[in-house]
Length: 121
Image (cartoon, rainbow, N blue to C red; front, top):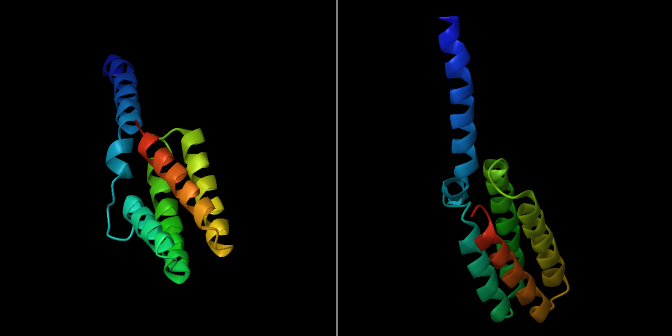
């Protein structure tokens, strides 16, 4: 029995580690309707292009909430630097929307989208 656990325990630990490391692409997808990060990015982009700053602020806050939810799910499978850069881009986006700087907001959204696409690959 002891020999069984000596062999079986490391195999189980390695298997669980591999599953957690590869689960990022699955966990990155929206589980509920409100945690869809790419959709909130798209809505924010359209609002900024239309100069609807009230909608842009609302959708950015929804984007931030969705990202905070997703980051908890992928924290063990995603690259830490990529997650940090996406968080920074979202905060810069918030500042750009507050100052109503269209070009800066679109640049930050583009950068955030790039970080999102590179996350968990």
